[in-house]
Length: 367
Image 1 (cartoon, helix red, strand yellow):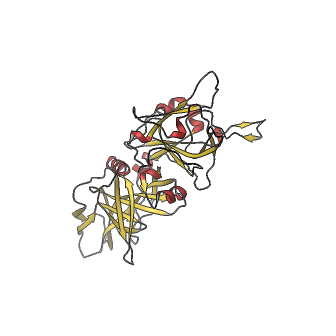
Image 2 (cartoon, rainbow, N blue to C red):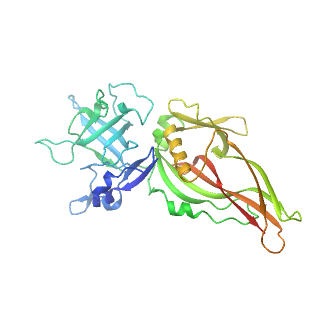
Image 3 (tube, rainbow, N blue to C red):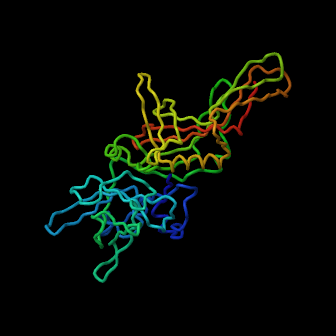
């Protein structure tokens, strides 16, 4: 799960590049904002050549080279910062897409953010014949090699704005807003309005959603938000007494794929992917996968917010509430705090939702 950092902010405060991301399985996405753009020829033309690191993740990068036969090869690249690393650690996962040529390299494998053979150090290339704006790549693995098109030293990089996505501000969790909790709903309502208390982005390499080539075209990133709401778990009318007995069974976690309730089996991961599945009205099954690192990060975020997991997903709530105000009460409602991670594609369509019930936050309403 990645938060964003504006490139202009990193240039103003260089010490920020040494900050480690918050929480496990976290990373940074560098966003080229309007303030960080540069111009040439008296400000008439915007510069599209990258002169220094870090590379922005909201741009499509173009690497062009010519071989000995003067054949022009063009590669369209995206670089993602490796999770666990501060920005000063410029080890990245490199991906090439829509290449105009083929390369004689190892057969492409499933993206794995922990595989050091898929991680490459990108740094400036300096020689007596070069100036600023030339780069080189090395494999993080001591016995590894970059893709063949990155092995040549002293290459340049150009950028353009992609048409199929736009990354906004994502700062992770707003701890103050999260601690404030939403306003309880009226007793006639089953739940309160959701309040967004956190936002991240997940690069597509952490998500299994359709074929890889289609996924790269449709959603290079996924927007993840964290919402809070109160959800009613029990209600009753006055039974001529001041005591109400609550005895309900709740699901501690719930997942929804394409708005349909699904199931997950975290213990049965395949190639580092946790699969979620839901069944439609016509009997077909829809599956959606997340890298185990994302699931672990979500649960870490929940646990630091007070959520308590366990081996059993069903939890029994048994308690007695007493009305202590004056007069008669007419209706009673009991609500639990629910935090929901919501994952959306870049076109705004909903991919999946993941609910966590905070059983330490249960509130009652009398009317």
